[in-house]
Image (cartoon, rainbow, N blue to C red; front, side):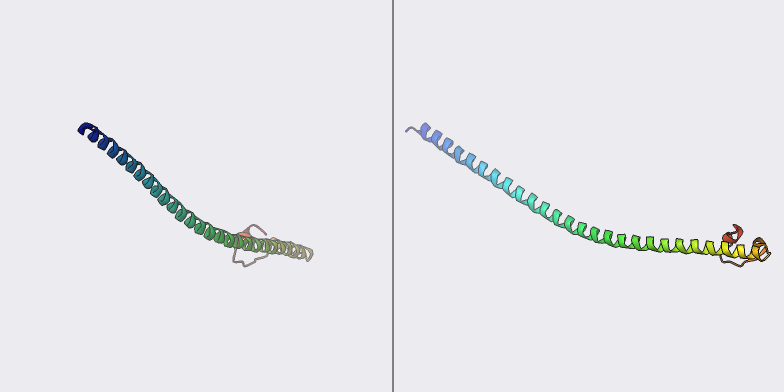
Length: 118
């Protein structure tokens, strides 16, 4: 083997080894990058799961509060209707007794209702 052949064999062999090292290093870097991305995605998913659980809890609580307020409003509306009916009955009673219900002075904490003749 001549000197040139030995040098060429060393260059080709060394180059091949270097090429294999580069390919191996790239694969290792890709695998590490994939691992880092997977870990980051896992942490994001965990955080989102916690947030979703908290939001579901808040939503459930708000739903219960809305239902409670809806029931309260319905009860108040029924009471208002009952009071309006009672007012009509009392006005009819005043008329039956010969009076004019519009001439009566009624103190109220809600003057707007009195002015409307409710």
